[in-house]
Image (cartoon, rainbow, N blue to C red; front, side, top):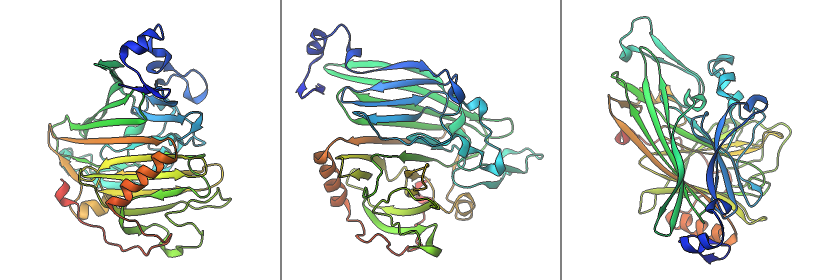
Length: 392
């Protein structure tokens, strides 16, 4: 039974108070019609709590806008939400992906993540294709989805808003991978549930790497905002050679800077008894936060991306199937997931709005009870990339 406006409401209660539940929440199909967004189909979700978010059907079913009671959660970059027909994923030496990099959630994969890479292609049994050339973070985020369906579903007095889409990444003499994504939220809830299933529909043995680039912006991200996670070990920092030069540690966020060079960390997280790992970014000043809950056996690695450059101000939470050292390291250490025909990998995640100081305190207590994170902002990176072969 949803709780709306301070009271629990049955389906009958809601029916008595309106001519349709769309007055309180819902999911509806729209099409953007101007500028570089023109032609993109999207689904707008409203849960009735003041939470609103949009799903870009034509951009891999990723989440673009996200706001809570008028306060923005998700990040908007200078690139905007570019129509995939304008995207050049192979451009700029593999960095063309950055010209379509925007929104709360950008999916990376399905066969490659992290920086540009040349991978051997002998498993595709086609002599002219000696290598697979991979741009940064892979191809999937610019592929339009087939919209399977969307709407509301009632189970007794529980109403669930849902949408489902299929994204296919394929080529001749290469990969044929399918992502089936279902996004759900219950009326009266602040929990966005994402269920992904990746399947090899082809008949070649095919690599699979996967990552979510979850991007939080102002006002949740601000000077003094806190990164809360059950960190057992700070494994790696891309800026270890000049660790403190920008005066920005992993734990306490800073205001936008005029000349900030991105910082990336890899953390080894502890999981709770349910096998879940939670990360939160919270702004105590405004009493608002955002939590990401994933499963350790699905995403064994976790990155923190800090882009505090003025005009591009963002904090990234990045659950990943592989270490930050990239595809070459994964190949050398036999850590890339290889899928035979029909093999699948499943990923279940929750994005939670921490709506007030009580929700923030509850999340912090849950995370701290799992494992206490380092108290210092600059813990020495261990370099201990734990083997993930057993997750295959």
